[in-house]
Image 1 (cartoon, helix red, strand yellow):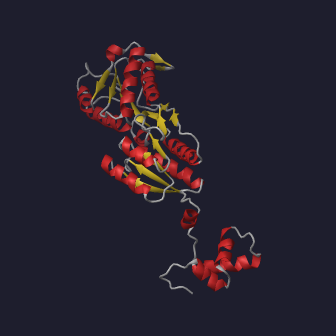
Image 2 (image 1 turned 45 degrees about the vertical axis):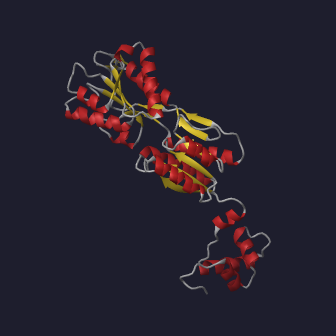
Image 3 (image 1 turned 120 degrees about the horizontal axis):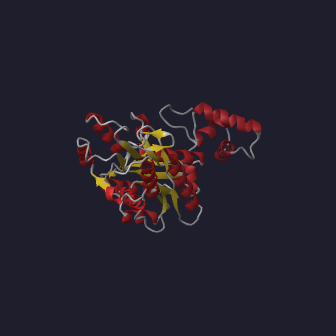
Length: 337
C-alpha cells in the first residue's frame, strides 16, 4: 500500500492488482480489450488506493489540455461574472475546464494576466475586458485562438468577438420614454469607453430622429443630481448609461423629494440584479450576459476546429418595470397622467 502522504500512481495500482501499467490504463479509460473480472479487480484496487488518473497530463500527451483561459476585467461586477458563468457552463458541458485570471480593472495587470495564461497550456483565451491594448491581444492570438467579449471597437483582425448591440439598446430606451410622452429626455453617463460612446451617439441620433433634438442633453452624474433640486430645469425622464448610475439617480431623487416615476422616469442599462432589487424596480436594457458567455465558448470551439473568425452581435431587449410611466398629461396604452 502507498504512504498516506503520497499520491498513488498507476504503477501502484498495477503492482497491487498484479497487472501491467498499460492494462490499468486500458481498464480505467474505456475497458475495451480487458476482461470483465480483470477490469473489476483493477477498478476496486484503484478505489482502495484512492487513485485518480491525471486526465490533464493525458490530454497534454495527446496535444490537448482542454483548458480555456479567461481574463476578466472586474470580478466584483455582476455584468462580468454573468458572462464568465456562461463561459464556464458551456465549457464544462464540452469537457473543458477554465483558468480564471482577474485583471483588477487595470490595463497593465490585465495584459500581464493575458501573458501568464499563455504559459499555462490553455488552448484558447477569452477576454472579458475592454482594457487590454490591441497589441497585447494581437500577440496573444499568434499562438492560440482569442475571443473578446463586449468590446465593440479596436479588436484586431484574426480575433473572435461577441458583443452587444449598444446602439440598438439606446434606441430601445429612448423610444420607450418617448412613447410614454416624455420630451425632455436626458442621458446620464460618466464613461468615454467605446460601449458608452455607442450608447451616447445612438441617444443623440434617436432624439434627432424623433424630432426631440432641442431637448437632448448629456449630463454627468453630479450635474444630473443637481438638476433634481430645480423643477424647472429637471428633465422628465433620464436614460442612464448603466444600472449603477440609474440607482444613484433614483436614490438622489428620493433624497430631493422627487418621485420616481411620478416626476421622473428612469431607464438603466445592463439589467443587472440591481435593477430587480431597486425600489421602484428599474426599467432597464437587458444584455443577455450568460448567452454572451455561451456564444463566446461556441466561438472558441469553432476557432479550435479551424473555422473562420467571426464577430457575433447580440441584440438587447428592454425590460419594463416600475421606474417609468407616462408623462404628465399623456395617455398611452391605458396609462394616463
